[in-house]
Image (cartoon, rainbow, N blue to C red; front, side):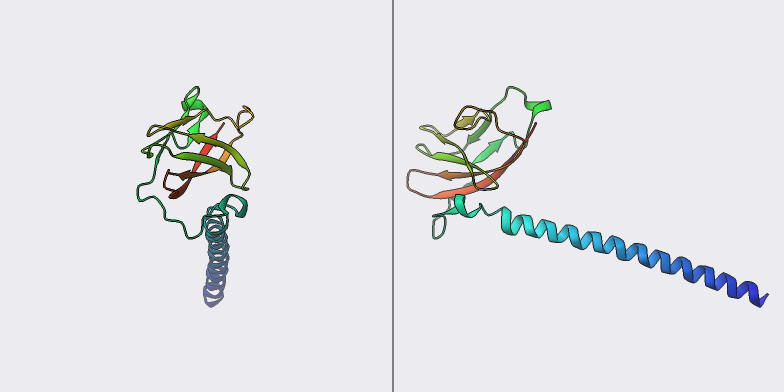
Length: 150
């Protein structure tokens, strides 16, 4: 009877150790995921150095422009442009990749402008996250991100 109890206790201890190892592995994955999210929003989200030049000490627009559809998906939005609205007349929208490469500049004389998902050369853009920088006629700027899923 005592030997059975010792074996039972040993089995339970091994199961507890396996479960603890499992929990530690899950916690490690969770920490890595949190670090990745922190990295994206700290280092990549604020527009890269090339795209962000001149953004320091700038008054930002108090009302962010509306961008729709965001994300743009080929299976749902084929033939539909991405629209930037709630803009002040005379605003410009500059689009960049997350690497800071300029994609296109859209100028508007009204409160909205549509992007046909093409770069400045007329080529369709690839799937990915794009940064937009809206500058109004007074020089106030705001930025945001949008996604294209092809």
